[in-house]
Length: 307
Image 1 (spheres, rainbow, N blue to C red):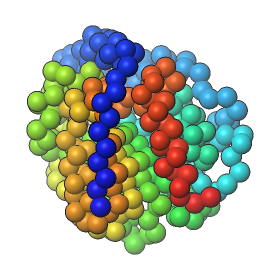
Image 2 (image 1 turned 90 degrees about the vertical axis):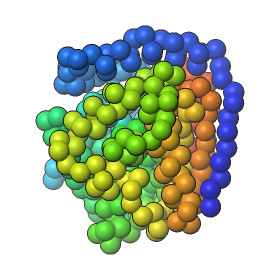
Image 3 (image 1 turned 180 degrees about the vertical axis):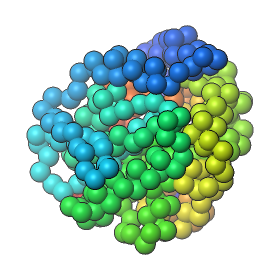
Image 4 (image 1 turned 90 degrees about the horizontal axis):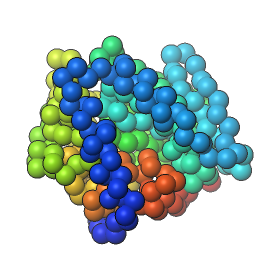
């Protein structure tokens, strides 16, 4: 079953943020000398300064090859946990750069959140990230029931969450309760129409940037491997999905196509399409009103599962 919601509201802050990203962020990814390793340092320096939610404990984890961090709200007392995979085109991003967002996610969901620090390309191409997220899920299963685990991720991290569902099914492990996908990057063959048609309107990426990221991560591997491009898997048996996309981002159709394929396989799918927002706009909490609303919605959705 597919539930589709279209949200037309857009604040002045959203307009300004898109204008700023188009001029300061987007051009950096198109530079011929773009260096992912250098960009990671910049993101950690700049985004790592953003204040995290109050009364959230951060604990680093290194466990048998699984790296990441737990974010635990002081008020959290139940067994619910979220496995979060960050975005960044498989090239950049880290638990540190996402901490302002993931700490608020933990509070909104009344859950402990484990943010995976998966290996990045080009140093570690496919299937490194897919292997890491599968190892992280097995790590969580050592202490938590699958019914208490939810997956979440944005962009490449949302694609990685879908990749994990593919691997869970293939391994015969119990499925998590649900998954929340923010602007999923699910087709590394890059066949979605919006990749080119929304290149001008997307505040953060272009079709060329998406293709370059895919080629760098794949490093010659097949884009049709469902661990890399989970759009092409069978969705039967997947848990419920909550999917957010913006109508003017280049990855819009990846999210739409995932929702349609999942619903066709009788997966309960909630698709929410927002007008004119930047790619993965929920990251911009607490300054963006649209981000704050989505955070509340995600919290309401996650709290339906387990207790």
